[in-house]
Length: 184
Image (cartoon, rainbow, N blue to C red; front, top):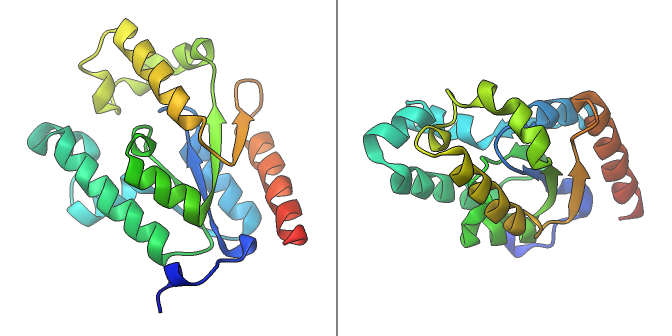
């Protein structure tokens, strides 16, 4: 019997953070992991570790489809076999139906929601480290933002992250998660 075959109590489920690139998933995830005393995993960093190269290099040398396949294999397996983690997904991960389904069925999915105007303020600091931004116009990025936001709406909880510090967001999320655990 695998972990997937047994019902998972709420307090053992992975907490999975989704949202557009630059929404703060990694920063907030690290803070949340400290508050809940859980291990933090950044999916992109784990893929880099497993494959021995940065995501930007995977995109350049192998292409986006190869990266998306690596992402799917890693995340579906993580959802099937892992418990009690805080997991930050790359901005495009949740667009894959198999990943979305695995996350929603085995974890607690939080959408870190950022308004377009707030995201624009972060654009300059993101462009060099986000391969998807390097080949798109601002109009194309806004279309991507809007399309992904529709898919991110399929979640368990939504947090608007525009006006709060990462620390305040992590505190509020930790309180909400602990409250859910106490009702389980």
